[in-house]
Each structure stands twice: as C-alpha cells, then as structure tokens.
Image 1 (cartoon, rainbow, N blue to C red):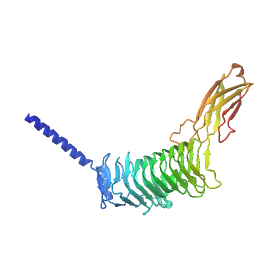
Image 2 (cartoon, rainbow, N blue to C red):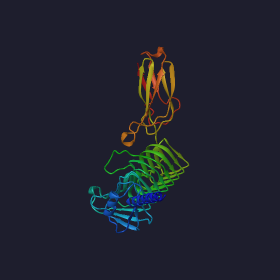
Image 3 (tube, rainbow, N blue to C red):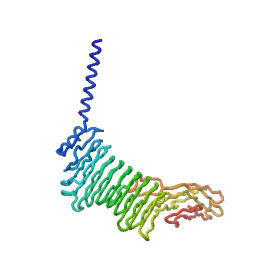
Image 4 (cartoon, one colour):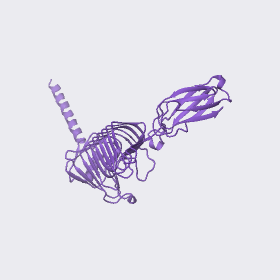
Amino acid sequence: MLNFKKILMILFFLVYLFLVLNSVSSADYYVNEDTSHENITNWMKNRAKTGDSLIFNTSKYNLTNRLDISKSITIKSYKNTHIDFIQEDEVYRMFKITGKNVLISGLTLNHYGNGNMLYPEDGEFGTTISGSRVDLKNTVINTNLIYGVSVSILKGNIVNCTINSKFQGIVVFKWKGNIINSRINAKQGITNRVVGSNNVVDYWYGDMVNSGIVSGKNGMEVTLWRGNIINSTIRTNDSKSSGIIIKYGEGRIHGSKIISKNGHAIKISDSVRITNSSLSSRKGFSKTIRYLPDLKIHEAFMSRRTCHITVSNIGSSTSKPVKLGLRVGKILKIVPIKSIRPFIPQEHSPNSLMKNTAKVKITLPKKYASEKYFKTVKVDYYNKIKETNKKNNVFRFKL
C-alpha cells in the first residue's frame, strides 16, 4: 500500500511540474514603457505560442519600428494603451501580421508619418495594420499620413472600433469580414483604390451593421460585394462623390441612410435590394443609378434537327428569369431561361471561371431542318427586363 501511495505522489508531482513548466514556456508577455522593440521581437520569435497574448501594460508606448507578428496571438491592453508609431528608415507598416489568427483589442493605434519613406516620391505612405486573418475589437486607429491606409486585411471582423484616417480607412483586396458597431472617418472610407496599381482583385464579402462612414471621396467603393448593410449611415462630402459605388453586387441595404452632399447617393448593381432606407443626393443628381444586366445571344448553331443556343450576361448584375424564343418558319418555340450572373473580369473576381452563361437545346420538326427557313433567336421574349442594351437580344442566321 505504501509503495502505491508513493507512486501516486510521484505521478502527481510530475503532472504538477509539467503544468508549471508548460505555463512558463507559453506565458503571456507584458509590455511596459521601458520594454524595447527588441524585447518584443525576441519574445515573438523564441517564446510566443499560438493562443498567447502580447499585453501592453502602460497608458502610452512609443513604437520605433515595425512589429512583425508571425504567431497566432492576441495583442491587447486593459489600460487602453496609446501606441505611437514613429516611422524609421524604410518602415511604412505599423503591424505586419503573418500569423494565421490574430486579435487586436483595447488599443489606440496612432500612425505618424516621420522618418524616411521607402518611396519618398509618393510622399507619406503607410499602413497601420496589414495581414491575413486579423480581428479588431474595441480599438481606435488614427492615421495622419497623406497616403495612409488604416486597415488592409484579407479576413477578419471589425467590432466596436473607430478608424480616423487622413486618406484611406479600409482598403479592400480580397476581404471577407464584417463591420459591426464601428465608425470610419476618412478621406476614402472603404475603397479598392491602391496607389500605383491598376489591376487588383478587389471584393468584399461581408456585412456592415449598426455602423457609420463619414467620407470625402466615396463612402464605399468596391467592385464586387456580397452582403448586407443594416441600420447604418454613409455620408460623403466631396464634389461628385457617391455614398456607395458597387458595380457587381448581391445583397440588401436595409434601414440605412445614404447621404451624398455633392453627388449620387448610390451607384449600384441592380441585384442589390434597397428597403426601408433613406437616400439623399445633390440637387439635380439621381439618388440611385443602377448597373443593369445585359443578355446576349452568344452562340446559336444547328446540329441535325437540334438548335444549340448559348445566352450570356455581359452586364453588371444578375438577370431575372426570362423566356427565349426560336422562330423557324411558322413555328415559334418558347423556352425558359433561369437567372444568369454577370461576367466579372478576372482582376476583380475571386473565381475567374464564374459561370455567366445559360445553354438550351430546341429540337425542331424534321420539316423545318432545312436551309430554306430563316431562323430568328430572341432572348427576353415575353417578360421584358431592364437591360443595358436591348439591341443584342436578337440573333439571325441561315442554315
């Protein structure tokens, strides 16, 4: 019995020792005013593990160099630490995040434009946060750069945050995430504009809920968007700037206010529904401009007695179901065609092979499969829909 008790005590001690050592090896790291950038970097490289926290334990901290966050950690403060970033040689990002899942919470991030720029001909250029999966919560971002991006991430939600930017609030490349209970005050609120780049994959899949944007040039400008804007306000002030510009979109705007002081309230895909919302534009400007579908007979050919027809949507929004008519001699064949999504150029789409065509087959009586009959194919035959161009609905050919 005595030996059994000793064995239990030894096992208990070993488990306790393991837990103690494990807790030490994966301990959170506290940053005080005198903590150096090198100290943080060494912790990140040598000790930080997934799930650890970098905790700022002071009311103010001067960051003199970029922080590279390579682990899936939480960066937070219980004291609303104000981190002032003083740019040094060729450093233009405040946080460069390569960790797969990073949470930033309870901080005020001040990005100032001091030091020598990597591209001095561009003036002051910097990004406060860039990364793969980054969630922001209870955080304030202040960026005073002439060409300053506050947030540039691929995945992650922005919750209970405030973004104040002299230039760009959120730059959209391939972002999947939501804006909830947050405010953006920026020259450009949510934008796909990138300095020095013309072709970027720019889409946003996500919702904006109980949030607001006050912007100079266009409140929300995204080529491709899928989501909802609920109980939110977007306001723009500059000349000819629109509250929302979405060329290809699917979703709903509900219970929101879109106000453009000097332009259109909304320029948007016809696939986006607008319900219980208030729109305001400059006098003489339309409140809403719709980007429409455009159905076209892409191809039609006969194979024996069967006519093969391909209809494509070369417009900017999903078409409603329509009917296609094939006239051969005295016969009119009518077939339904389901909704067709628009063709989205590869540089703006996450899927360059997105289907934007519909194919139908119509078999004719043997009598009419002859060269002497003039055939006409017409899409959008009975239930007419609004289109960009009605002139390409008809296709005529001879056998």
